[in-house]
Length: 143
Ligand code: DQA
Image (cartoon, rainbow, N blue to C red):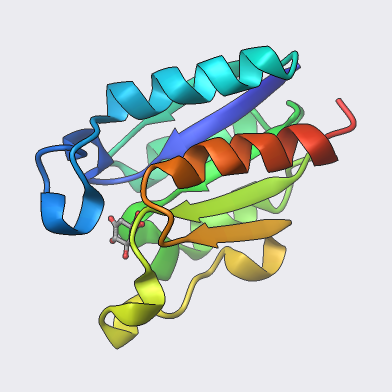
């Protein structure tokens, strides 16, 4: 079974982008640790990142019958009804991740179009949140 790990806009710059907010680990580090954690639990990972909303929508559709989703949609979290509409079709659990504690930041980051369709939301745990999310998807997946 395959857990999809989707990252949205600007997360390709993890490690370089505002390290005081997002830390020093790169997206490649994050994806490797997700793979290691998933592997230990008997799952594979399909990790993808895009700066384009429509590409994320297409991937959410394509991967909807997998074991579940770990999604950090970046700023699209706060704006994208289209991504929500695609992710709601997922057969497996969705775990929403934010590296930073969005609730301690600007008010426009407090609302998420994904949280009410998510099995769990992990915020403010840094990049470790992705590994927690993989564990939650693996535990709740029936794939
Ligand atoms: C983020 C929080 C979002 O508000 C922001 O737009 C991001 C990253 C996070 O991981 O903390 O791009 O999703």
